[in-house]
Structures are given as structure tokens and as C-alpha cells.
Image 1 (cartoon, rainbow, N blue to C red):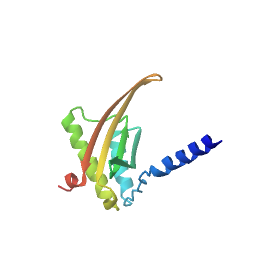
Image 2: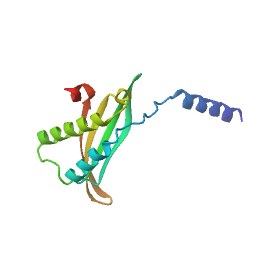
Image 3: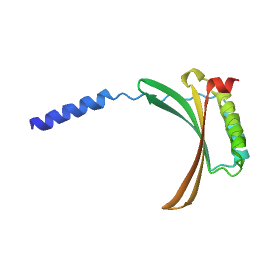
Image 4: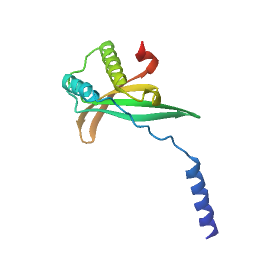
Length: 136
């Protein structure tokens, strides 16, 4: 019984000492729907969504906006063109964020799922832009 009580107190202490950052809400201007619809029509993805996220390294927490684009049909073939498109999307999303000071970067993730069931393969291209890069 004493061992169980000790383990319970130890577990409670460990859980309470792990404080994870809270996800911040992204507040968009009303025109954001038009921007999202334009890219949905242009790229024809299965999913085009934005989500808040964070990264913690040591004691430094970086909050970011993640834009996920799944199985887009009309993506450019070259890496340079895809980078240009990612920068354009990030800049358009950045312009629509009301609470810019809550985040410091925007990640654009292009995902392509190929295959069926267990034989499913996922191809992913990630691009990350700081606000300083987007303001230039």
C-alpha cells in the first residue's frame, strides 16, 4: 500500500511538472475564406487547412501557423516553383492574420498520399518562413 501511494504521488508530481505550452488561437480577417477558396480552386487539394502549433527547444517556445495541403492535383513540378508557391501562400496567410504577434513563423506542408491500405506511402515537402522573411 505504501509503495502504491508513493508511486501515485511520484506520478502526480512528474505530470504536474511537465507544463506544456498552450496552443494559441489564430484570428483571421474575414477575407481569409476568400484566400483559402482561391487556393482550393487553384490547387484542387483534398484538404487545405490552417492550425496553430508550437515547438519547444529547452526553454524557448516558438508558436507557428501550420498550413497543410493534402493531395493537391495542380502543384508545380520543380522545387523552385514549389518554393515560390509556398512563399506566396505563406504571405497571403500572413496578411490575413489579425493576431500576428502571437506567432513567429508560418509552415507550409505539401503532403501526397500514394497507395491503398497498408501499402500507403506519404511524400511530404515542408517550407518554413519567419515573419521577417514574409515582410520583405
